[in-house]
Amino acid sequence: MTKRRNALIIVLLIIGVIAFCFVQFGVKAKIRQQQQAYQVAQLNPLTNDFESIVKFKNPYMGNNSNDGNLNANLPLANVPHTFVIDPQTRELDIRYTETVQDIGLAKVQSSLVYNATANFALIDNLDSMKFEFPGTSYHVTREQVQSWYGVAPATLANQTAWKQNVQSKLANPQYVKNTFKAFFGGGS
Amino acid sequence: MNDLERYVNRLFAKYKHKKGVLELRDEVLANLQARIDDEMSEGASYQVAFDHAVKSLGNVELLIEGHGRVPLNPLKRELAQLAVLYTLIPWIITIPCWLFHSGVLANTALTLLLVIVGVVYITLLFSRASDETTRVINVERLRNIARVVWVLWGVYVVISECFALGAWFASNIWFNRAIHIDGPYMFADLAVSVLLPFVSVFIPLYFMRIHRLVQTRGVSE
Image (cartoon, rainbow over all chains, first blue to last red; front, side, top):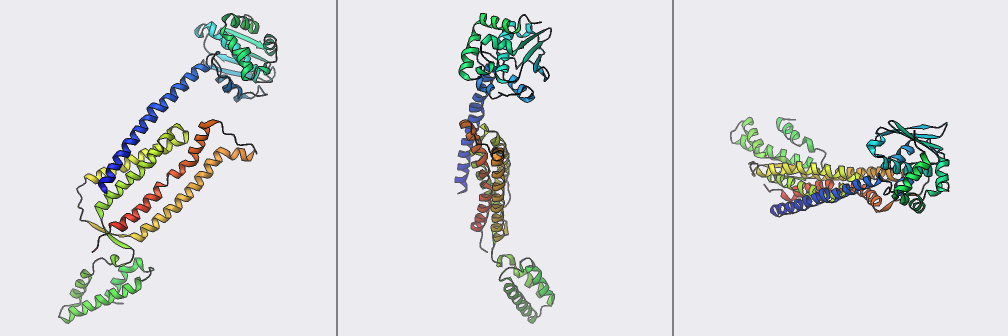
């Protein structure tokens, strides 16, 4: 009986160790890899998952945690930044600590177009935004965004409209440049 | 009360509330008295006769119902072996729980427990302690301990379930909101946190097994 139990213990131990290694180094490693790939995709305006940001739709720009969470799921979230909410002017000011040159102008342009559209589409009473980088800042208002798309930004806040009118168009570099100019002018 | 009565009363003091112990005590007392009288009639002094009678008595605990003499070291080894077996099964069951937040702690705790009981078992397996040593064990007490462990386990499961379900659904109930399970992962996460407390059933089962094992491993005098 004791010997049979010892054999059973050894068999169970082998099964357990194999299962443990499979979960730790197989399944969990794959999940980690997928999560990393997802995080990288989130930083690209062309692959950012709209489903992950639409849950931050909120009527009030004064909702500090919602503003923070929304922008933490948008492109440039990996660039260290702080943000200031001005409830008087209803302006959200995002202050990045890296220069445009360090991040790359093309990346900044497409990201700011995407981020500004997302913020105006999802936060109902947000009137204007300022994106500050060391040495440069870009300012955009809800009217500028609305006049560019020809519709109220909130109407873009569904998967189909977002894909069609915002995300897919950013694949065209000329469209990005034009939109960026329409939104921010030349910057300051 | 003479010396002999005091001595016998002390022997049964722990069990005086047990059924049949008073009769047993009287019987032992009468037997010892008869033996002392016998020796004294053959010329021995009271003290010598008393000492001989006490020595001949042996372990009275074995006379009391619910007690058994068991080989100590083989029993320890078998108990450690069963502890390894009883820990291995929930350990394997909870390995997939690493994919869920609530399961990580449970499997880590079981891994630690498995290492501890494994080390104890291996140590006992290679120890050179004699297999001849025996000890009298109160089998009935072990059964009572197993019952208490079952009750404590039941209380633990009820409290854990209240906490688990509360963490998931308390705000839905409080704010009268519909319960929303967002996909299969969330459902699995919910299932893990609800079912996980039941994995600890190996603890009362092990205590029950200790009782059964001691009962079956008892050696006759």
